[in-house]
Image (cartoon, rainbow, N blue to C red; front, side, top):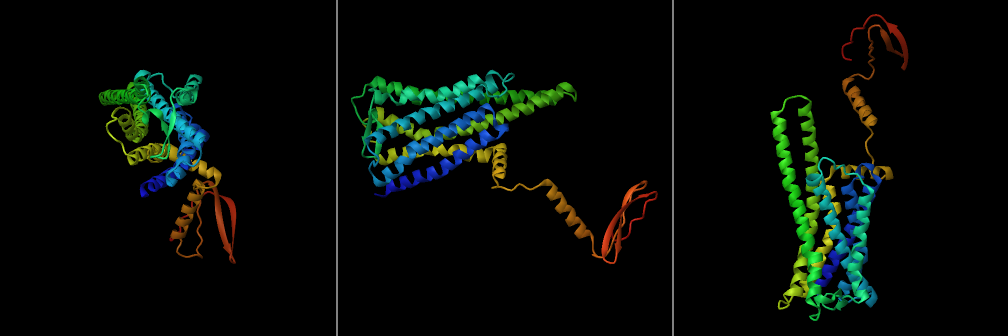
Length: 373
């Protein structure tokens, strides 16, 4: 069958792009001091999650889907499904944290928000990595199970394949991992969009009505700051939207398999929705490269330190430009010009028998410019 092999090729492509891209994001954010802000730390942590998800989940599915059978044993099959659930919840919590950070910067505390990384925020990052653990290892403790699905060649949650799973358990995981986060993320980002638009419009009107005094300048500075915050919020919104678009097919397929049991979801649709889920692991590097100039500059700076990217030296550029001017201005290679400044030391050039020497001597009179020099 051709379809599984095509899906396996895409999984391998995601590994090649996602691993290198997310590693670049992690190194750039942690090595560049100007990127040491809360939103960048959250995004770097999200890049770590994507990097590990590609290694522990996606990489094992490449060969299994290509061979159309799981090739790593039952224990690794269960662990693979456990890691898949863990990194899904972990990514969802990252999106919630990033959305709340933008909500706090624009809506809740726009005057006191400074974007620095503090101990409580570091604790929040730690909780993002700890909370998914009990939600993921439940089947190993008797709460639920992982079952191998021979139609898609990897293990899945038991309630997707069995009809004897209690409805309360299905509803709990649907609300906690699907509907709840989706509604909260939409609410936070919609509030940020409305508030940022209203604040910028109000400040723009004040700047137009104000005069060129200190208050008008402060209003203009505040307007510039708010525009930068709005741009940063819009960049975060693009990241979140890209992730949600990648998650949405998997959510719809999972919802139909849990509740619309009369509808038979084909294995091709399940494979495709899971494949699209891993596209989210490529979103960070691609969006940063397109949207963020400071990130691109930081990457170039890091590459220049490693000797992989040569940045032009400003002094070299000036010297090359001056040489070009001298070559263009001189029409006869044997001509020699004198220049001086009144009542100031001058550099007098002497051309004698093919050799040129230089001598500093005071001059009280300016020397007329020689034609052609």
